[in-house]
Length: 365
Ligand code: M6R
Image (cartoon, rainbow, N blue to C red; front, side, top):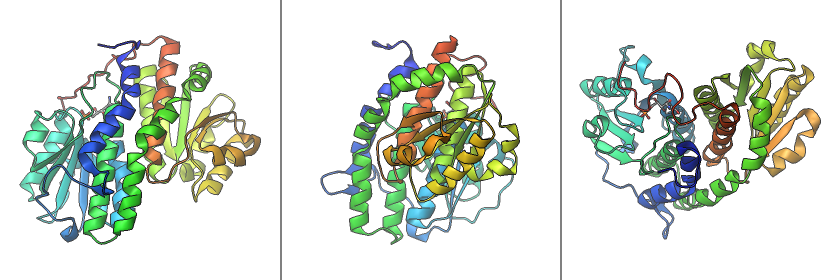
């Protein structure tokens, strides 16, 4: 049932504050400012040398965001790969490692095959899944449920942000066990996760502005998305969402890679969506935007208030997200890229919930 919403996708976008607070209630002990995992871990983060993550599509991008978190907050090296590459690479693995699989449906064929490869190679198998009765859940040693409720729209939204909040909780737990996060830091990070539903509600407030911007975006043949650090995967996620439901070609690139190739594409017809809250690297992003503007490129900037104040007039449109610590920014910035894809698709009249050639659950290899 779509309720009052025109599409399941919009309904699910709007369910995110509730979905995330529901997920958080299973992973966080808010009264004490601690992570509380839903079940006992069959492995110890402290003795791990490496975490291997495999997934497909949006779930892969969630894994890429998690890499930044685990490496920064838990000092745990992470390898992330798309399952369809991982499974055929014959990657060497030390027995006793941890392999983590992320899947909304829990039935994605390549992700399942990657899981079985890791099992044969002596890994502990953990998965983050929404469908708890699924094959991936069944074949895992431990399941971290996403708990966002059924997701109907082919383009994933609430499962993505809920997956990210599970991954963020796990990264904090790993940081604690490995001695890189103090009790006080855990308290602060947990508080940031606890405040996410409110921040997401605020981010949803730019809907009208995004609707207007989408009219311009719908005229484009190609769109470039740029981001740095943990927002680079969100740039790729934005590009994927746009491709899936509008059929406009889009690419997500690391901002710093612009001058190594894609800058050649830039002219007045190429919108560039820059996902860049005002963090430590914001100056570098400003100079990337300057390079785009100098070549006539049209910039749509997703940033916070402070970022908006310091950009000058290189920028065509600004979408403001609420101020937050960089830890939770990838989750917050996922919202405007979802809305941008959604409104562009609605304006173009495509079949938003059931885009051509795509299936909700990809059980073929
Ligand atoms: O069910 P899964 O999470 O394993 O699905 C993985 C991808 O097929 C999925 O995320 C796909 O990329 C979505 N349609 C993205 O919106």
